[in-house]
Structure formats: structure tokens, C-alpha cells
Image 1 (cartoon, helix red, strand yellow):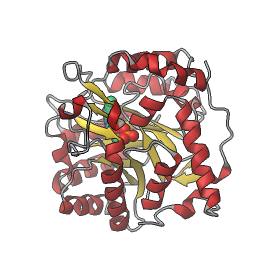
Image 2: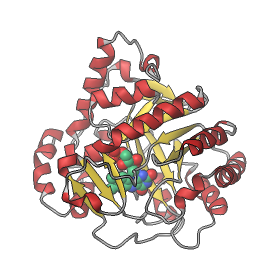
Image 3: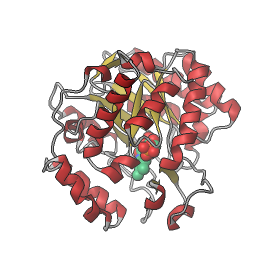
Length: 352
Ligand SMILES: Cc1cc2nc3c(=O)[nH]c(=O)nc-3n(C[C@H](O)[C@H](O)[C@H](O)COP(=O)(O)O)c2cc1C
């Protein structure tokens, strides 16, 4: 099935319950039914970051492929990078269903999955079974279990478990659906976790760069503290941002009051504002990945101009299907050419 056909089927999938539709999409991808983006990408989209070469800056955000079951087919859709996970030390079931809600009038999604996943051993084994070289950059996103977690112990162990396979590793301290998780963004706690992880990393033969994924709901001073804590250490970058617990007044869909993290179009503005601030504060010391409401070449470009080197999407991909990836890349390349930008790196942070 070509992307166009897969996209044409999206309305059918949309009639199902959202989690069922998501699982069906993953299944279709695993079976190779979603088609391929026939490259090559426009050379203006190529970017070097995190010590890695990206064919294009458009990535799939964490949470779509929590168990790394469809990494290769997802890469073949044309993403420059795919971030699998979040994987936790032990398998866990997550929150009771329903836990995923579409807000179509708002082009948004609310989820309260709570890190349902098969655990780091199964995750790492799947990454190890992937054929190399991969057609895109592979990120691994790690987080703690709801019960019995000791972050300063667990995060370094999770990092070590994926270090052989992943091109970069994201520490997720910002999901709103694991009680207490976002407290790990506090300065002292984050410093302790990073120091433990970086110490473990120093002992390993392969040491992929470490990123930290942050929430869009941080207080003013907290952002400065996080940027300082990361920039003072060997942290390569930040992902800005995870889903929000805020509920803008503009939301219209019936599910707007569901508990969980909101993402998609209503997250674009707040997450891009935060990105701009983080870019200013980090003064080039951190590589930034912009996530939150990326749905077009224009929104991807806006993230880059606000300071992102790379972007990620989830909600718009869930709505738009595989064909969206090619469209975003084409439109972004056209915008860069229109503005006379020779290489994407020249556009990073120009409006920060
Ligand atoms: C259903 C769903 C599940 C998600 N699960 C995860 C996750 O496991 N780990 C994570 O770091 N982010 C997770 N996210 C957050 C996304 O990676 C992304 O940061 C956020 O959705 C903003 O991007 P978007 O507006 O393009 O969706 C999830 C998002 C959604 C919609």
C-alpha cells in the first residue's frame, strides 16, 4: 500500500476507538502495508547534529512506537529519525482504558497511557534485531516505572541497556501520566540523575549522546535551572516539549476535560515559545529538538527559526497518516529555498 492509499484509509481507522486504531496502524506498519517514501530528500534538509548525520530534520516523536516493533517501516516512511519508547525497567500495563482521546475539532489528542510498555529487555532486544545500517537515525526514549522506581539507579541502567543500539538516548522526565515523574525536572534531582547516568556512560564502550525531554508547563525559574544543569554537564540537548496539562480556553471537543497530556495544534504556540526561551538561555550549548504541534512545513520551519535543529511530531501524524511526512519535507525545503537559505543550519534560531 502506498502512502496515498494508507492516507485514504485513515477515515476508516478514525471511526474506531483511538487506541484500537493506533494498534491497527502499528500492525499495518509491521506488515509493510504503509508504503515507502521514495527519497532522496532535498539536500537543503540535511543536517549534522548530536554527532550524527540526519537526511532531514523531521522525526517521529516518542510514544508512537513504545515497544520498538515498527522502527524500520516507520523510518521507511521518510522520517529523518525515529524515537522509540518510552521504555521502563519492568513491563507495565499503564492506566485503565480509555486512555487516548481524539479532539478532532482542535486537531489535538489527549493521552494518559502511563508508560504501557513491555520493558527494557524486550525493547533492547528489538533494537538489537534491526538490520544495519538503518535508513534513519534511531533514538531510544527511557523512563521509570510507576512503582518501586529509584531514578538515580534506574535511568543509568536503562541508558546502559540501549547504549549499544541507539544513536541517541532521551531521558523522559516530563510525562504527566506517571505520578511524581515531572518532579525529576527539579534542579537537584535532575543533577543527581544526570551525574549518575553520565558516570555510567563514561564506563561504556559506546556512548550515544544524552538528551532530556522537558514539559511545557514549567515555571519561569525552573527552565533556567534545567538549561543550566544540562549545559554544565555532558548533556547533548533538550527535547522541547512533552504534552501539556494545560487546557486552553479555545478547546472545543467534548473530550477537552479528560485528564492527561494534551498535544497537537493547541500545543504549538506554548511549546514554541518555550523552545525560543530555551534557545536563548542555552546560547548554543545544547542541541534542541522542537516538538509540539508540528503539522506542516510552515510549523516545522517556525520551530527551526525559534531554535530547533530538529523537529518531531506525533499528533499530526496520527491524523494525517504517512503521506504527511513527505509533504512536510517538501514544503519545508520550498520555504528554505524561498528564503535563500543554503543549508538548514543557517536557519536555526534566526527568530529567537
Ligand atoms: C498518544 C501519545 C503517547 C505519547 N507517549 C509518549 C511517551 O511514551 N514518551 C514520551 O516521551 N512522549 C510521549 N508522547 C509525547 C510526544 O512524544 C510529543 O512530545 C507530544 O505529543 C507533542 O508533539 P505533538 O504535538 O506533535 O503530538 C506521547 C504523545 C501522545 C499523543
